[in-house]
Amino acid sequence: MKTVTIPQIEEELQKLPAEKLAVVYDFVSFLLEKTNKGNVSEIGNSYETMLASEEVLKRDWERVEEEQAWANL
Image (cartoon, rainbow, N blue to C red; front, side, top):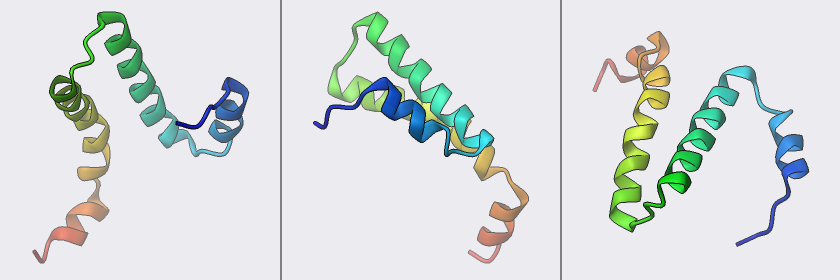
């Protein structure tokens, strides 16, 4: 795995639009919570990631543009 520093991460964050920062914040919060709990089982981690992602992805799923894009399927 590539070594990444906090300044490198901060530099990339500066390039993101504001709405994407909420996604990053949710993900970092999730990682911290999992780290503090010490639960790193592979299946449990995948399931927890799915649950944590649901609210973030819901923001995009419920947009009018998404509804229009999928209306014909």
